[in-house]
Length: 302
View 1 (tube, helix red, strand yellow):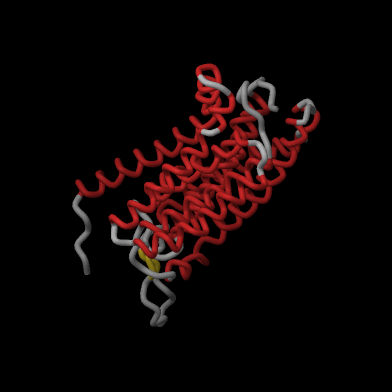
View 2 (cartoon, rainbow, N blue to C red):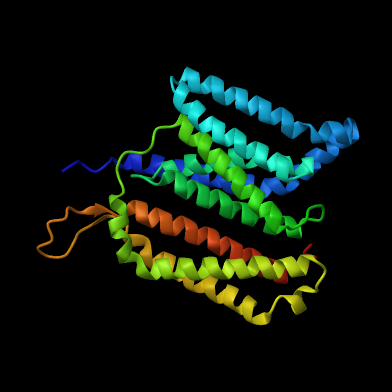
């Protein structure tokens, strides 16, 4: 049996985890203020010059990605993932006529890399790319909810879709330049031990779709207290309370999980399963919390 890691190693991982997730949270909040940079560029140069910034970033990021791929001796692998990433970027540019929206691509490519760095601290086994994509897409929803409360931004379902596609582009670039964590899919065998957490996550995610749809009507000009139903607000608060309690209960479910007596199946490390459920549940909680904040903040949601 391997010796447990020394306490210094444990605290180093804790500090690194907190730092990386703090960067992800700060970056998500800061995205709302990118419009301030855009306004400065328009005032100093011109609106046309400001709209060309995303195009310049596509070129710089693409060239840097290709050069880094060859430097890391992943030339063919990096190019194999670069081609679909480039096609998706072209698709976004084609379907979105507003060039200001194209900045979402580099924003969420970087988001995917930040989320990958934060998750890779604890993740073991296959499936990390899928979790990175899910987190980036959900953070794109959080971004739009925060924009609805920003005095110079607007909430939009369409932008959530662009954020998700841009997150996928980021995941493709991650796959082209990184080595998957060690392990396999055995962590999935531990999921039946987390039925309550899975039920809470599914319920929270489905109700988060309702939140997005109701807030679309609010952003269209409907008064919040009239358009957003009181029962939905009560559900948001109830979900936050029960999910927070469930997170506390599930804290000890991460170590090695054993089968039943006489089961020859080797023990399964349940920490990756806990990471999936805990991170996604927290992000769903943030979406519900943003809806509650929008209800009581006293700001116009648009």
